[in-house]
Image (cartoon, rainbow, N blue to C red; front, side, top):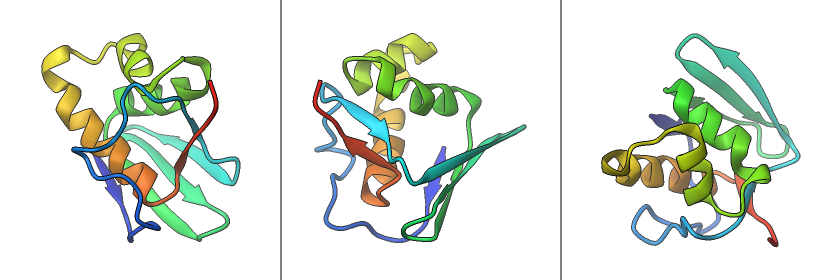
Length: 104
């Protein structure tokens, strides 16, 4: 679902990514929607990530408006059985600094 190029600064792995935490897109990230999902470009790190799912794009866009990443997934229509895959995708985005924690 995502191909977050490069490693972050010791950010969360899929198993430890906090779905119940509050997250947001980094303010230095630009989103370019595509048929397959989207391209994310981080102007600070110069990294590019591919969101390989329109639903994942909806999750990322909804992070700032929802109280948690889990709520953003639910709002975007992610089925419970798919939550581990989305958690892994969000963990990769956190590791590449595309998304950041925020205070609720």
